[in-house]
Length: 120
Image (cartoon, rainbow, N blue to C red; front, top):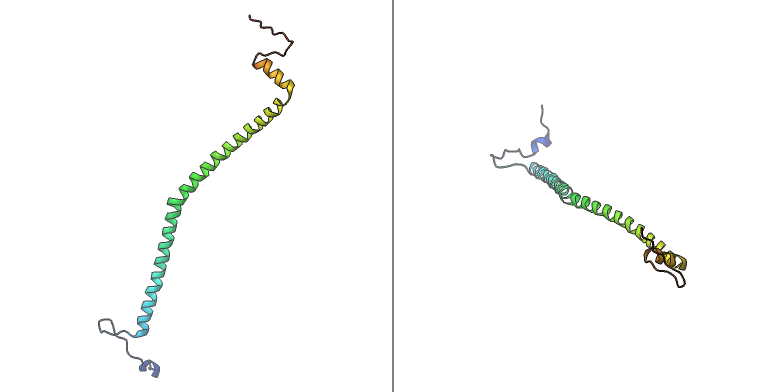
């Protein structure tokens, strides 16, 4: 094979033991090492993010979901109680209901009525 003028004009590349490596090769080595370093750092960030998510955030998220379910159940119970209290409030506005309630639960009678207590 014949060498062209461009290949013979370059300085010969020497090994590291010889002392000289041409600038292009040195730049390629530096670029490749920086390229590898970027990927190593990127992988480290992903590993840290995965650890942070699975070890820290996921248990907190699951605990909060449990709290949300308990609070939702408690809210439904309180809404039911609220409806019962509104119903009872509406009934207490009716004088006939108040008299019936007083007679049944408190053993009270209206003026002019006679109370009978029959014991067996």
